[in-house]
Amino acid sequence: MYEMILFDVDGVLLSEKRCFDTTCLSVWELLYSPYALGIAGEDFHPTPDEETINRIRQDILDEERILNWLKSRGVNSNWDMAALLFSFQLQELLKQLMEKQPDYVTAVLRKPLNRDAIQRIGKIVREEELAFDPDYGKVIEVVNDESVDRLDLLSRINQLAEEWSGVKTQVFSHGSALWNLCRDVYQEWYLGKDQYKKQENKTPVYPEKAGFLEQEIPLAEPKEIRSMLDQLIRRGIELGVGTGRPDLETKVPLASLGLLEAFDSNRIVTASDVVRAEEIYPDHAPLGKPHPFTYVKAFFGRKTSDTRSVAVRFPLSGAKRVLIVGDSVADLLAAQRMGCHFAAVLTGPSGQKARDTFEEMQADYILDHVLDLLPLIERLETESRKKQVTEPTEID
Image 1 (tube, rainbow, N blue to C red):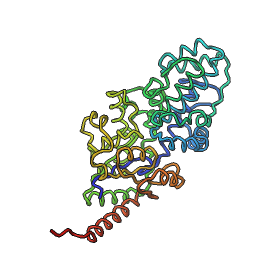
Image 2 (image 1 turned 30 degrees about the horizontal axis):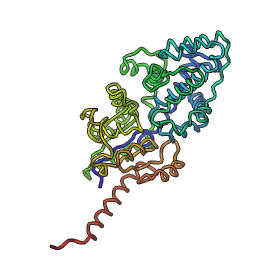
Image 3 (image 1 turned 90 degrees about the horizontal axis):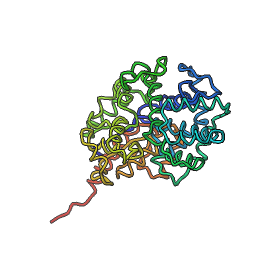
Image 4 (image 1 turned 135 degrees about the horizontal axis):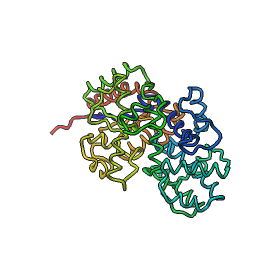
């Protein structure tokens, strides 16, 4: 039987809607805000209504087709999603600008792309009267190269830029100035002014943003989820979390729903832990899922040094006593590399359509809903007891 269960958060306990909304708003801002590229085609404003948010999401995710593709390739971090989608459009724009300003574009690809650099690119585009209409769906056609490491699709953007420019560049890489800009924009949208200033220690570009932190949607009645977690604890099972959300975005919603205290605080590992580890071990980045670091650190305990989690050999010793519960291919890949069992929950963005994928990838269990976890554990306990009764006893 399992002695530890590690849960993903998005798509398992909480709806991912607001996170994906925030990803799309981030790309929208970086393209159309006068404090970013500021290209023509949209009137950017920092307080869109729900109808506008839904329209932006449908455009940027190409009616969810891009989201399903990203999930199938194991992209789990919303920061990575925002960086990938914007970076692709930016390199397409620079490719077009190369025809008119080759020396300028060549120089751009050799220097970090921070906010000032992005604004300068937008200024040149406007001066050249360059018409650019983002083709969001094209990212699948161009980036969907199976030879590219699914852990780092951003590397493909660097390759594309090198192919048309002849410049070997790393400006689109994970952890680059551009990636950090995309992260900052995402955090400002999600946290809102006050929490952004408090958590990031930065002044928001748009203080009008209200933030989505207090608007999270649970995937079941919180009392029912808590009851299930408490019953698992009474069975002697340790509960932990391995999520692509940062600390604040994990703990505030779970606490507000009365769920946080059910988890061992030493086994709650978030994107904040991943970022800190990547700063110490940049040669091992990216460490976000589908890399198993998040779950490995939760397994060892958050107080254990990052060195142990980064340098561990797979499969983990004792992995079979651990069950990982997630909604994505990224979670499954991490669990399989660790040697842990995996329960796929069909409440992610693909819903029931994900069943075939999880069956093909040989998930150990497939659940319609996280609340189906307790009946699964009860069934496994019953089967284990029956097996012990029916097994013959050796006689000396």
